[in-house]
Amino acid sequence: VNGNLVSPTHVLVNAEVVEIITYNVSTTFSCPAK
Image (cartoon, rainbow, N blue to C red; front, side, top):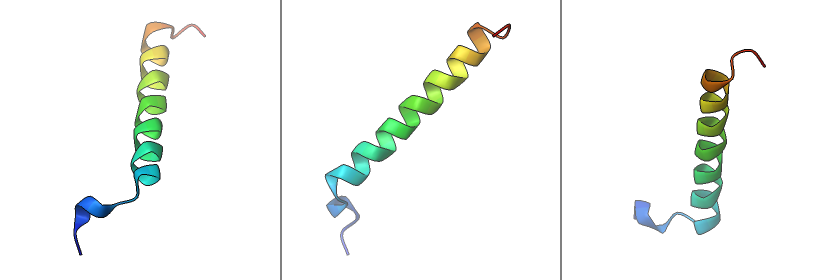
């Protein structure tokens, strides 16, 4: 099985999750008072 044949939607979802986590972490560290 070729690991590169993962569905594009799965990759997009993973990228979106990483982006959301990164955004949440940066928001938490830049605005701890919130």
